[in-house]
Length: 327
Figure 1 (cartoon, helix red, strand yellow):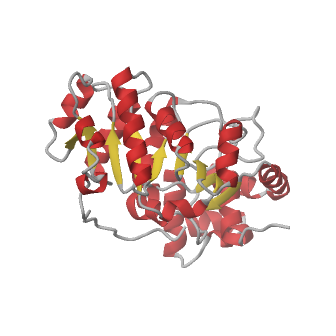
Figure 2: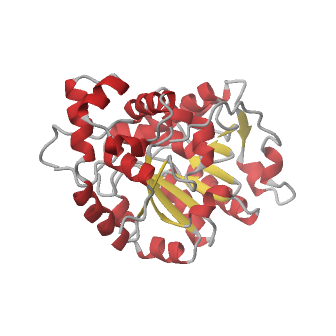
Figure 3: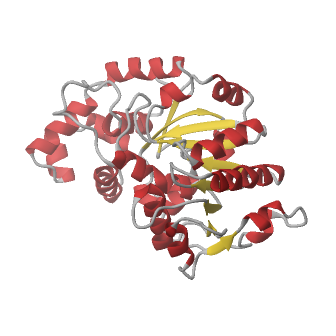
């Protein structure tokens, strides 16, 4: 039996690639941008996604102003209900759940900060309630030296001791160090991956932390998806927007996901951003620290037992929420 409401199920049909023929790339799900435009049209008509399930080709063309190809695409995506049900069951058997922007338990923090650019569909395994906790994202380059590694470990331990949930992206380098340290400290942790979610949750330590309700693994792409650089870049915004504060441990200058993510956060003012300011930090760190909105944080601060890391984070973060998308 379908456990999803009709609006959510319609969104899964339109915006996920579940049950799509991997060898046939002629039929593709709607992108976030495409779904955003569709959602706006539906709202203008006082409709919700479920209404699409009963609309004829004539109605799709007339009411939603779709051309012939767009209409055929929508109808083809909506026609795969049976196959989608099997795909959902398969994921459920692996311990993977799905939420859409029409679900009440969808992370509101993503809608607030990303609005119509928040993922239409999210796959997850673990404790979804962790998104409600105060959290800090720890990001950095894949290739790091011993000083950056040591800083990351000490930072995560201090954050864990002060009750923060640690958010990372699961990539090699800083992300993995932060993630593993959080697991070792029995700390709550969220990892928003850009690929291979199914493989990741098979790791014995990850599964144990999920069973202990200390862990949440999330992804905006199919759980079996392989690595693609644009998905990794896109994932950066989710790491930032799921947290209250962000710390860049190490960054290359003007290249790489860490640099791009930090600059994107600065542009959109999602969360207060701190950058490691120790001696001999990478050039990217130095350039970021030159930005007036960014605050430095050093190893001396981390190891000082008299200092609470939370005192080094801004006490308030004024933000303009604006209209939050319903679906």
